[in-house]
Image 1 (cartoon, rainbow, N blue to C red):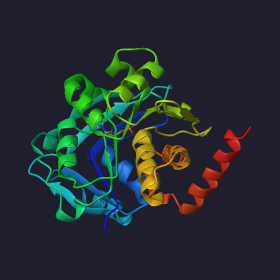
Image 2: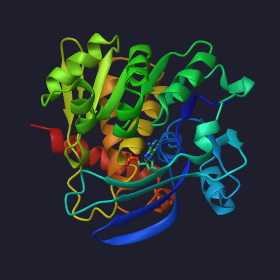
Image 3: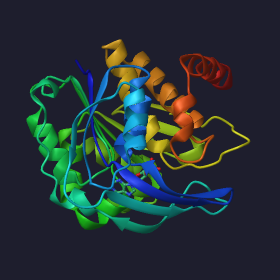
Image 4: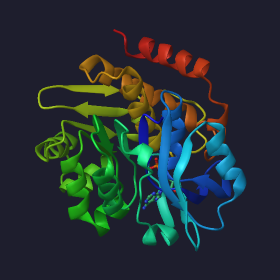
Length: 300
Ligand code: AMP
């Protein structure tokens, strides 16, 4: 039985950073986030792949014991994204987005996923996010993410998603773009006005901030000397946050703060390698060790 249900993209990425280039690598928001979530709770993916999706990529997902019954294969090509980072690793420059099979995807949730209590609507077409959410019977917690591509093409639907979730999560640049303000506190207030209980703004290597109506909490990024590739950091953050909350089963202030720290822990472990590959080597021991380091970092 899965506890966390994740919908998002499953793709083939070409990534260029100042430290290297990889092509046709396993990527997608659902991949990074479900791997991160799987360290905390049984996780299943809803997503779509094309006929060209390599078997070894599916093997990596299955090695993490992620339930793949919700992955559908359609005729045609898998989603493809290519991006480039300059020395400022906080902003990816999208070179190419090919939606391919995502364009014809009509998610049908396997019967046993319908009782999932924790749902992460990862970055994908907001209409697909809404269609998945409609099929879940009685979720306890729904978290969402998005990106500029969807804000620019389906702004109203992105707003509808935020209106339907408990925690809306997005990058700082996306929050500024969506709410047309340079100020992140104002952007967070707009998210909260849209009926979300929590707004979480991710700030790349500088960590993340969580806002509620009357409080906020900041978690720093882990000070890494060797960041190889930031792709997937935001998805890993979100997957770990949702997975940890599913593990604790109790949504209170203390657990939410810990979930933010676990998000930052997984994001920092993920960016130490190119692409998704080094997520294969993350262990519970390394997660615990870095979590303890965070306690030291924020103590005063
Ligand atoms: P992140 O670095 O966490 O923002 O996410 C990177 C992942 O998002 C990559 O592996 C891409 O395959 C995926 N991605 C890029 N553009 C889109 C998009 N428009 N919709 C869904 N996923 C995307």
